[in-house]
Length: 329
Image (cartoon, rainbow, N blue to C red; front, side):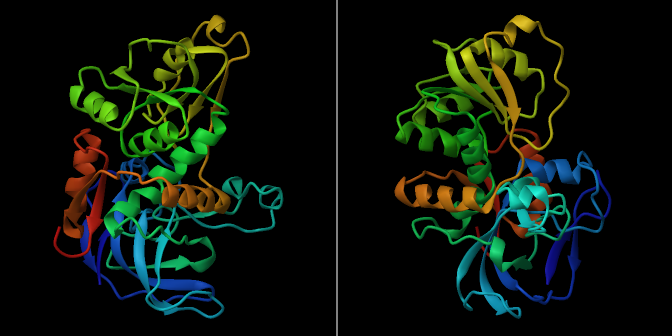
């Protein structure tokens, strides 16, 4: 099979021919039809996350069809399933026992600590795969598996926000904006200064206002979610929130947060992060995605153009999400 593999952090992926993997106990072998290209993939490829063992197949927004089933795994050949970032947990640590498997001490992550979906075939733990709403085709479904899931978890962490600020209007924000407005939120989108296309995109998806990240919103925010991995935005987001406001940092990696005056945090404002996801997040989000007809903006590229997809994402030239597909685009 063809697999786009990382042989060293900071280097381009290499198109390798590899044997088709075989599913072990509790696992599924999938013929990959689509795999989203996530900003976390950039952090993996660029060596910004610790513990990357090369060679590695990145990619953790996998949509595929079951072609083989390992012993004890529950599925059916031909079933369409989605594979997320969280690949497996120990089920025994204090976090797993407390229902917070996203913090598991022994967690395994797709496309990071095990091979992912930038390949023609992938193996996944059956217990950590999700059914995908039928309304989405394979390429549209791929971004739901991380951009959608992390956006949803961050939204839950934001509390009962009526006015919601989204900093960075990429794959996650363009999905969450639609979901939040459908639930009655007023969404304010913050984009890179001068990015008029992103602002127009946000308005077209229901945002009540869109402006540069260094601007103030037309009214104070109940909560802000930072999808942009820019630590300097944390003080700006705090300044934009009202009393008891919350700033949620949704990325797995972020540049350093600069010092800021205590007055920005005072009046019971808070800064929190979200880490990974739980299967409960996935089940809840997929139910909502089935009910709310999300417009998933995708740019399809063939698997062999994985490096080009990463380059476009790094340069901020993807509107919505980039997705690697098997076959013609």
